[in-house]
Figure 1 (cartoon, helix red, strand yellow):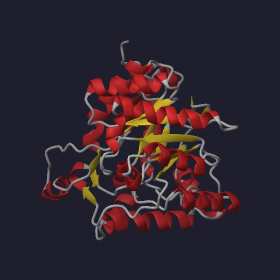
Figure 2 (cartoon, rainbow, N blue to C red; figure 1 turned 120 degrees about the horizontal axis):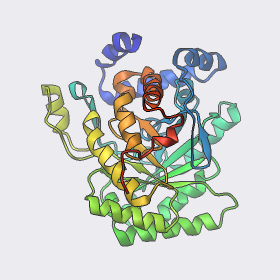
Figure 3 (cartoon, helix red, strand yellow; figure 1 turned 45 degrees about the vertical axis):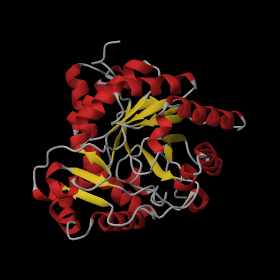
Figure 4 (spheres, rainbow, N blue to C red; figure 1 turned 180 degrees about the horizontal axis):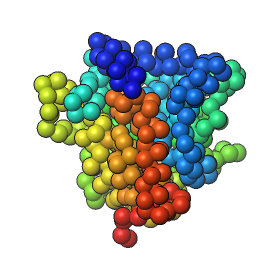
Length: 367
């Protein structure tokens, strides 16, 4: 209630990126101490709804999507406000300023965001230093950490994406529990071309060669675009599955646009970049369903895109998602949305007479 009445109206006075930065800075400061973490935990603690995936136990399915904590600088905040896991990044090997500002836009009436950030991040070497500082400070999160890996613009221009992904994995391998290979962002020129059959095969072969030389292994997931043709999605699933991918993230942002419901939304939707939020929910569920049918029930899917309440979360699960992620819902609804979703899922399990969330995964999908 306080977020809707106090925080969101105040943030409307700032552009979207500035509001995001201020919220992140304030939250990470509060969560940097045990007192702050306990205070936030008291306010936002979520009920337990355990789920197992990727060799880890998650307290409930709802995690933070990539893009919110690009610099890996607020890792202790996310468990404190109720998330059961975090995906940090995306990280590229080379530091990048990203695209010119402004590059993030809100469509409040449609509960949607448009961004063309362009993988702005400090680069893999500095991200490693940040992760090490968090570890040394004793504030390392007790929840699973995924790290989103993208490709530097310079590597795309030089046609050497495999080297860039591998160099980033080398820097961050010891810190992540899960790694997400991002070939689906619309904001780096040519990146989505890496989803073509030959190029995806080459990239995943290079990653497998890297994995084979490490003493430890981590699950690696492939993030899928909602704008790909259904047959292309099936092809990517087949290529990735044949090369030992451990699961999928569905979906990234879309270059598609819905009909705006206000003048502000019309302005936001006219901007270039990827759209996230409520309008993406339908296509996200479709892609989750396609991936689940093609990959089969043994490869977990992370459902993301338009999940802003129990209904959308449940729809993602029954279409095949084992885990969920939020981004835009956190912006528009505040941290309380995590608790609301988990409670809603518990209620739906009870109504369906289901004891464990795994029984609901893909229950609407026919193979």
